[in-house]
Length: 254
Image (cartoon, rainbow, N blue to C red; front, side):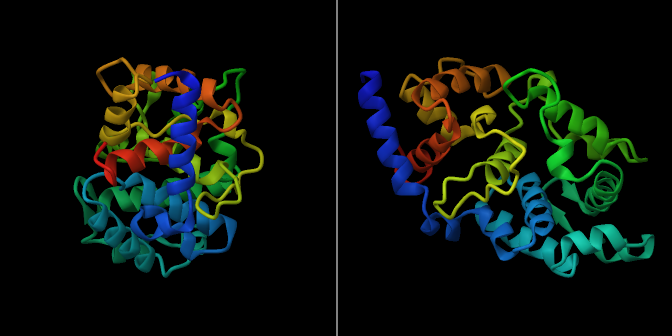
């Protein structure tokens, strides 16, 4: 397929899937329950972190998370005391259990009180044009507080060649703002042209079939290769093609 034909094909798929109908079947529905910026970003972050496996289970457990936080995640995080964390006992999503959930609440409180919140701590601080070092720095800040070693595995590190699919998905939700009603665009200090595609089995397989990706493993090197090819199709908003790749893989079995 010629590049112009590929772009036309993918642009049509973006229009097909980047619309509010997509929300009903996707974990992004959880942050859409909220209107306050901090509630949107915290609920989005927690939902993204457990977004692996069966999507019905992800959505159900993300709803449960919000209920445990009194459906006011920002207020709970800022004002909780140690005894309030007991209510989280028993929560589990695959390998993410209540110990991890309690740690995430403590780390998020530290981020909002000491580092200006998620938007600030995930910003790109160097001269690079991807979130590779920003996510690495975020992980360092996240675990500045006392924590159990087991919880570290739930925050990926692109400097260790992780694709960081869940954090890249969360960044897409917060940064992209194309008025379609799916992504939020609440992080005005971030640049959507620097976003990376949330690379998973579905988007990776479709990208390989379309020759947008040659690397076999779904790691950060593959993310960088896909970045370059998607940016050549739309330099200002490359990650809109996540809708096309994911939709082709999940809904069309491309």
